[in-house]
Length: 243
Ligand SMILES: *Cc1c(COP(=O)(O)O)cnc(C)c1O
Image 1 (cartoon, helix red, strand yellow):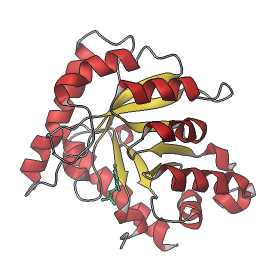
Image 2 (image 1 turned 90 degrees about the vertical axis):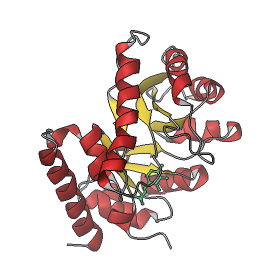
Image 3 (image 1 turned 180 degrees about the vertical axis):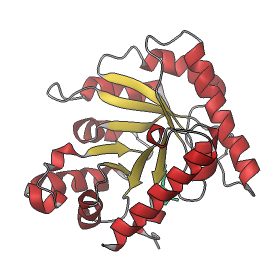
Image 4 (image 1 turned 120 degrees about the vertical axis):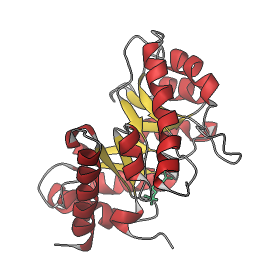
């Protein structure tokens, strides 16, 4: 077994244990492997171990990796003979206006939408031959000064507008809470994101309820799962430190 395959197995074990501890179905939490700064070879190793969903922060780097894997012969790219276009790519980093076209043409999901202008551009620029872009709104859940994300009290209004854009599907919320001193404090931060998610869904403002709450990374995935995360985004625990 490669190191990446082994680390993936350990992360799945953590997710499984956290779900059992919180009396949740382990199938209710997806794993997004965050491959930023690691090469296409590392992604291919993870794919060979069964991982299909990958997250990238830096748009040009992500687009290059997506193209590199698509260009590889299927058995090389995935080790299984499965086509590399069966992979699912999530943009999880800040999106500036001048990058929306690159995002719209390459990624399957964008989890970092925090203003309407970006959403409108993604909808307009989504190539017609591709399925609609799956979108999460990034929420600045604890008001961190240097963090992107829509303010919690503006999230409902943004969700209402994004849900109406023709080439986007609003899937949920994403947040990156500040590191917390302990498990209880981490749970409280994540719980505020879950409360906002439930509140927007209960508002009746959306034609279809959101189904994705993207919360939790290497350091805090247990707290996120305890609070109700449906997707954890894990880099370090799978690919190693980024130096
Ligand atoms: C880098 C990053 C992750 C993964 O963080 P790790 O601590 O390496 O697991 C998750 N989400 C976002 C938005 C990131 O930028």
